[in-house]
Amino acid sequence: MKKLVIASGNPGKLREIERLLEPLGLEVLPQSVFNMPEAEEPHPTFLENCLAKARHAAEHSGLPALADDSGICVDALNGAPGVFSARFAGEQRSDSANNEKLLEALAHAERRSAHYYCVIVLVRYPQDPEPLIAEGRWDGEILREPRGRGGFGYDPLFLVPELGRTGAELALEEKNRISHRGKALAQLVEKLKARMRGDASGG
Ligand code: IMP
Image 1 (cartoon, protein in one colour):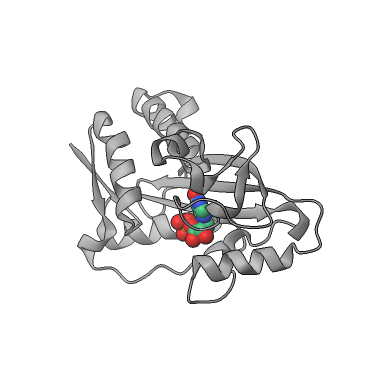
Image 2 (cartoon, protein in one colour; image 1 turned 30 degrees about the vertical axis):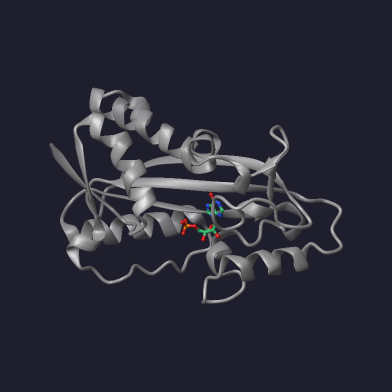
């Protein structure tokens, strides 16, 4: 079985990725087993930060590495909080403070459209000139007050119009099927399969 390091310490993400990649003959290791320093994420785009994290993990593990990066982009705020989603209200990275700040920023906004975005990058080695890149997007609207107890981050404010429910009102499996991360992971698996077949569409 080929080994792959995942540039994340989040147990939920690790389990999800493990479940999807195991059938492809890939064994997934968290980056914590390599005792590596935290990667810098200084860039203005999700893709650049994601690549930086994947390269960093490949460099410190000597293995192929997969990283993901995600956030929420609000149209009335020109795409903010974007790459700053986790620390929108400061370095304490508090979900409730971030949600409050978002509500304040949109207090007078009629236009409430927003989307979550997720990118996943796989590099075979740090200088890999052809990283495998998968993306997913999930469209919704920002409510004026939170609803629901599930999910995390901005989910209580994120209304999925087709369902009439927020991200925090969806069961985890349901969210994983339709979310930005779910879509990006599904695309990753397809691209990986194609690459393993030697097919050019594998990127
Ligand atoms: P990360 O890519 O896991 O570091 O996520 C960055 C930040 O974006 C999180 O801390 C959340 O604030 C936000 N975010 C990303 N995905 C989701 C989601 O599925 N629900 C709610 N918030 C999310």
